[in-house]
Amino acid sequence: MRVDPEKLHSKYAEASVLGSMIIKPGCIGKVMEKLGADDFFLPEHKDIFEAIVRVWGKNQAGALDGLLVRRELEKSKALQEAGGLDYYRQVVESVPTAENVMYYADIVLETRRYRQAVQVGEDYERLLQESPDVNDLVQKAQDLVLGMETRDDDPGYHTFADCAIAEAVSMFDTPETIPTGFRDLDHMVGGFGPGDVVIVAARPSMGKSALALDMALNMARAGKSIAFFTFEMLHGAMLQRAYGSFGKVNIRAIKMGDDPSRRNEIYKAALELKGLKIVIHEKADTPEKMLAFVRSWNKSHGVDAVFVDYLQLMSAGRRTESRQQEITTISRKLKRMALEERVPVIALSQLNREVESRTDHRPRLSDLRESGSLEQDADIVALLYREDYYRRKADANADVDGVAEVHIAKNREGPTGVVELVFLDDYVSFANMSFVNEAMA
Image 1: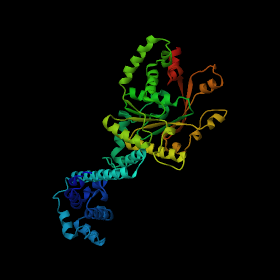
Image 2: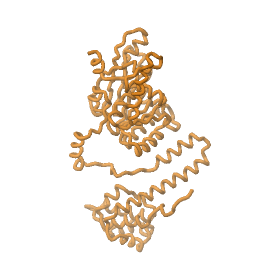
Image 3: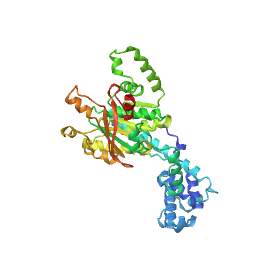
């Protein structure tokens, strides 16, 4: 493996950061937001950085100068390890001004990232020799890459003094939440926001995939960029569903030759769908694969919302003691992805069979399958129920009304309750109740 030794570290940049911190203690806080002791390559620089931080933290008002740091190094018996008195003086005198301290800090951080990348490469070469299983090799390689520490310009804290007014203004300018396109549902939950994990759960055949696709289409129509991970339907089947949902085209009737002239409706819907920013991924069945794709796609195309269909078809990517523990691991990692990438993650889940054993088949939070962590990690839990399904199950000729109930069983930021939608069986799609009222008028 070829390594550029000049990129491994910059002695001058490291010394310049430390010298700047000593001659201008006021910059120490900003430097600490970006760098830690481990970001320095040379051991003597690590020792000096830690001494500066200790003195700055202990002294009232952060009082600090070169003599105080020197005494701290002597007290901890690290002065000799830090290169001795002569080298320490060189560090203190390395820069005439601290004006460019953050420029040097960026260089230090960049060299640290390069060292991390080199380490990942060396670890991967070792894995090639040790791991005979290709799938295991790929999974471990992904873990290595995703394990690289990432930093951005966000310090991770925000004071009311700094952001209260700006946040109030932004609430009226551009809302952070993304509407689902279903009026009553948006009224109750306020749309889905960055960092939210939304669980949409139901028994099989209730239409949870159709509801998720409708939400994704509605968001994309509003100009949002969507990443949709599917493990149950291939992209072709999803597009056929989208023709029905988007263009209100009866796909089954056209496939059966009911009215070949209506093929033009499909082509028209296809042209409209072509303009939507939706990417469908069929193979990212672990949280690590998802995160890697979302990060990459977000940089190149942007990602505003992520859909996962569905949790029980995912894998944690490594052995766990039980399926319940595996779902817990998946749930936690999806929450992490939502927070790190600042996107809502809408994940579908199956409910357990206890629903079927009750007289009233309406779902409850306790019906979430295999793990209570889904309820704990989720910001919103929506349970889908259609009485028509059970009517048809009992009597294939029973009358149906199309009413679908979305039970908002958990809503961290608002009320819970039931929202009614209508399921349009011919289109395998959901609509607002007003759709039926307008059609009947």
